[in-house]
Image (cartoon, rainbow, N blue to C red; front, side):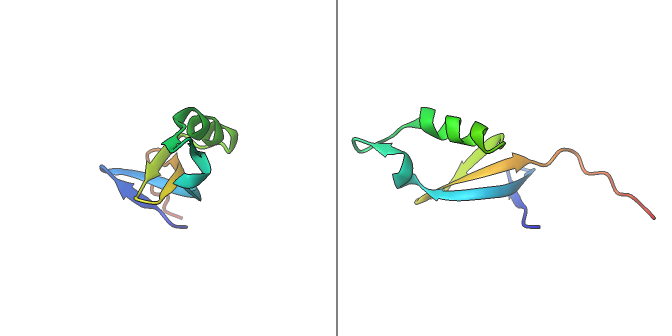
Length: 66
């Protein structure tokens, strides 16, 4: 499983979508980003120059010794 470490928090990436998919009249519609994030069960969005990365925050990990 891939994890992203950002600002000392871990995230599980679920989907990565080009920013253009959320652009209307040359502006990013953040309401649509938020709606999509909620629709796919994510709680955080990271971004780079070209993509939004929809992620789930990893809660505190507990080591299990078996």
